Image (cartoon, rainbow, N blue to C red; front, side, top):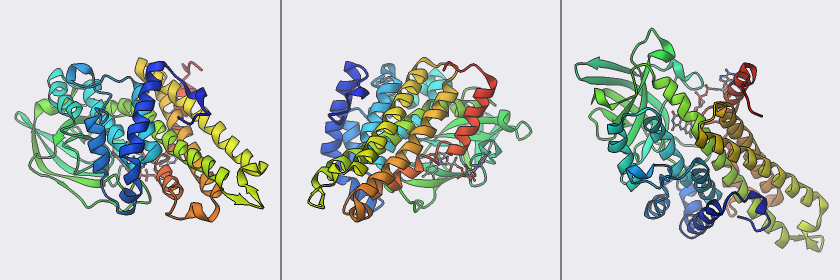
Length: 389
Ligand SMILES: Cc1cc2nc3c(=O)[nH]c(=O)nc-3n(C[C@H](O)[C@H](O)[C@H](O)COP(=O)(O)OP(=O)(O)OC[C@H]3O[C@@H](n4cnc5c(N)ncnc54)[C@H](O)[C@@H]3O)c2cc1C
């Protein structure tokens, strides 16, 4: 934590966790962040460091061998990893996203079978909702799961799947009843090794270049019916409930990216001299820093409030998850853009990390529902009433 920002104190345990994760990230993840981005390669060093410190999937309950971290602690881990390398922060974030359907709606057998290796670091989890023609309108998906005896047979294409090809396990939403739209969608666990599962080439992206994003193809993939998560027809509801919780983690990722940019820029302006003095002495620079810190502080408070609601399962989590993700990601875009500005021409080059942070920040406004969609979600809950504001 930046020394000046004790406002962000939460509890002694959370502060100790932040301190420990920060030093691990600075030692083991930061040194590779630029190379991971430059070569669009998977951050294996980050995965190794997170797994060996039991931080790759901290949210998994102790009964499955996990750390049993609460929603806020999980946010702090993601935030601290994102502060040095946004691509790497998708390891803990997407492990939570992919496994949350099992945690929320899965049978005890599924939990034992899939959460245990996730917690042990022997298999990551991905989340397969989006399709080429079903993005914001995810309920318009076409991937089918047809019952055949004791099995389901999956056919279709999922698009934009984070960590696809690297993850061992995939939560896949598929249509089991095409007449029922969202109520005809069911969720399944598919394994990387299931026959008929293949992956597309990695997408060439603007940012988070170290996080592989691929299509996933299902060609007559036969899986036992007990891999269904919850009851038939409940998959879309589970997918949406999952996003309520995990949009909070994307907010945390956005906070981390913005904090990294603010920390870097505020050190830089104290060193860089123009007109015979550090540029930090100019009030125009100071006002920019003040605004960046103010927005970041507000985003952090909203995110941590949403994390508390996620932990308690409050009825207005849908609103708070969307609000935190939307607000924090907009702040991350503004703060990283301003941080580039504070470095002048140097900020625009790859010799400094800020252009990477600005590119990485952009995705937080897009995935897990675009920020337009977050506003649709928030407005729905505002109009329905029941917000404890
Ligand atoms: C790098 C990356 C990683 C991703 N990871 C995953 C993943 O792991 N799993 C997964 O399932 N998905 C993933 N996604 C998919 C992501 O969630 C979708 O890209 C996102 O939901 C938007 O869908 P779309 O791209 O089809 O855009 P579209 O839905 O086509 O939207 C295009 C534009 O129209 C706007 N729009 C659409 N509907 C409305 C509306 N009703 N009101 C106002 N504006 C609207 C959108 O906001 C956007 O600006 C990932 C995407 C990316 C780029």
